[in-house]
Image (tube, rainbow, N blue to C red; front, side, top):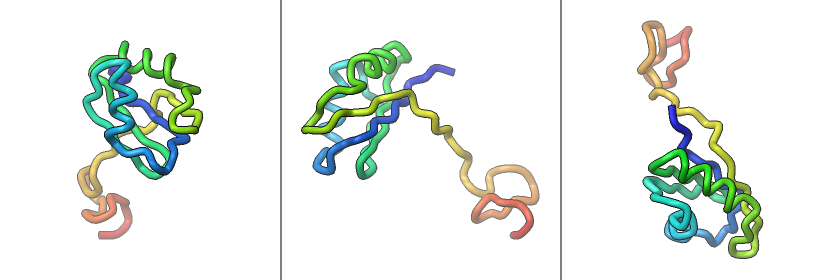
Length: 97
């Protein structure tokens, strides 16, 4: 599985999705970008582009903040109730319905 999702930390409060996309597009084709408060995620089309962004933008001063850019450690989780039998259809946990 290729690594194309990056975590971007220490974002200034004023940064919007378009701002982050514009910065990261300098390293390659951004296929998805999300901003959540003071952090965000950027997805690239290729693994090479993602690694280039980590190398060139980690520690980059952006709108007065030093960015933290690294390969995301988060995994895609299945939706609740989409697992095996015995799981709650609302929360995905076992032991109750």
